[in-house]
Length: 405
Image 1 (cartoon, rainbow, N blue to C red):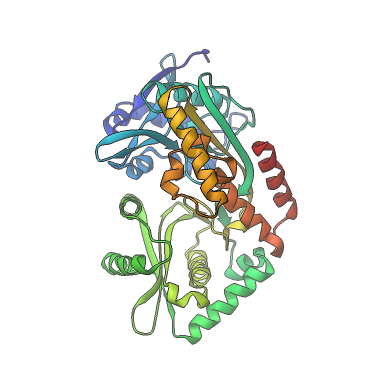
Image 2 (spheres, helix red, strand yellow; image 1 turned 60 degrees about the vertical axis):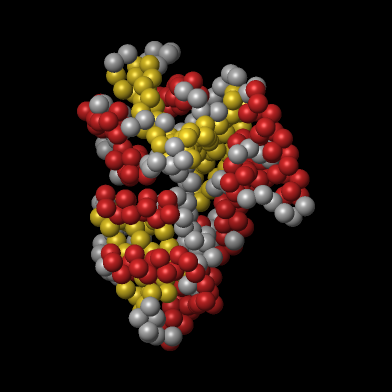
């Protein structure tokens, strides 16, 4: 491969369509093991590296600033990223990859570093001043980006894939004893309360009950999140499930989609008035049991793992790479705001998530960890005394300390 790759910005659906045959060829190359010729299912079935899935995740507020990288006339990689826009105006803040570090770059492992470096140069040349890349790196080597403030946060995190096994009892055995006990105990409690599992809800009922629960839940999804879910459900084989109370109301909901033998869980809502029944754990238990009966083999938590089940996924190496343009008013403003954010956090009155986002990579590492997979990962590993290998927790703490030093 030549040392300098040619790059093409991919900002619209038409720009992706113009290279559709090349994208298909690239995906096929990435899905084949060079040594054995076997198809790598992780690439072939990884929906977050599917171009249509990425485009469905874009919107007027999150517009593609992706980049295609070419070695002469051969497409060798695509970096998928979006820039945040507000009321038709670009902000210069961009992000790539999902919360678990998937979906950033479609390329062969040997080309990953060159593709990322070339794409980053293109994105900043086009006017972006702050870029956050989230990835599961295939090399722990750090790239260098001249004239950019660069921050790496590396850690071992719980993965986002769960193997479901051949039977529900076999699946429960893979969980820690406390989680297994909680699933069984709270399932009995909900049965006693007359709450039943609904494995297939109509779209109309789901939307109606989702709107009601979204107003009540402690963690409501914003309109952009709900619209994104709806686009995914239209694009893929949609599934909507929930827990119904004796009066007919839904007290918990989740939605997702299937691809091959894997179920992708998007979002879940629970009635906070029934918090003591641990509806989240109960609904996921029922969902897994139903999926196993339907011969599904895996569950994937889209956009991050669940602390209840996710910490029993196989751990993976994760990296947050935060890049900001040096020099000028933007750097000075971010540094000043980052200092104010840290001071407010130390006083127990932190700024909102949105304000801290404006700091880019200049935000203090302890605050950044709360906005990436690092902090949830540390919580999951701390809580993993009921069955997870404690060495994973030690690895996570060690790598996090190295990244912060």
